[in-house]
Image (tube, rainbow, N blue to C red; front, side, top):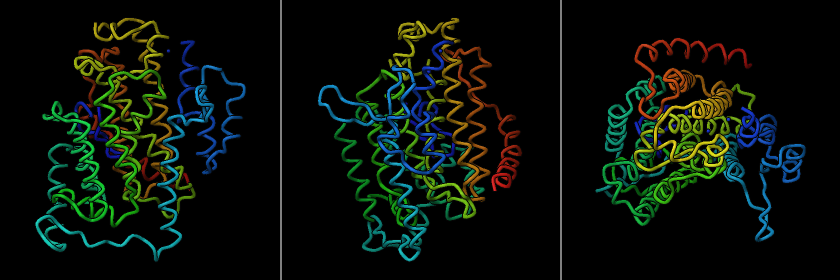
Length: 415
């Protein structure tokens, strides 16, 4: 269930690749939508441990705080949200540093291309062209969206997409059964070389050039590899905190990779951190949508990407999923899962309005199109066991002018 979801853009992989009285408890436990994180989004500052803990006061004991005491070691451990937010802070700080010190902005380094002793602009151009061809072949709708970007940004997004796809293919591709943790270790080592300007092949070379030109940090890339490791060893998720971390690894990471390329509107008054958080929210929303769409397909592989505790609260179990029957219990459960996914999309919209003008339209288009998959699940009477929810061509075309209008109107109204 890993996903190639180039931030702000719908994942292309067909197999990326969770409530009535219980609704309040589930929504409260959603890390990204907690009062504590909303406070950080509004202020652009990270809450201290004390303020995080104070947010918990008055809430149900079922809801864990962002900082949870470990009863075994007596230490403070981080929740998934807090772990991810630390990465967000680092990415935002990297961009802010560049904005403050334009003289220190990333300058293209000399990329040593495979089979050569020096870099070559023509060969590098060929590498980007090949990335574009791969993108056009495997992600047609996304590829068309990239054509609305400036040439430099378009090429950079192609390079990021191709690396993410290749990473995804390690565990979801034709050779997935032969992939071992050691193979992923080798892939991560290759990533480290890439960031040092020593790519292994031409496709790596395009990304090496991209990360040299934009303030892109290696951590989200490492985290995506960690998501692949998780897919090798894990097929169940005990609660939403557990699932949230997985969604970050395989999809939210792409948001953090892509924002430096997409760019933030110079006139935006939003904090860099809030824009990154919105990008993260879209990645999470996309992956939750994948999960809800592909329940039956994943069950056929023995996988259940739904919080086990919430299934139990709804009176459901893995056996019900493997049986593939749409019951009232399942409908109620699915309604609550769709509710959560839509809330993440709502959070993501706040960041789209702050992107550079040249990036807003394709991002709005992808957000609206992917969000409609949730509508299609409803239209299928929540039968995501045997029916695949998808957005038809006519609806895709109809979404484009709406996305364009939003990219213009939302921008002007937010000033």
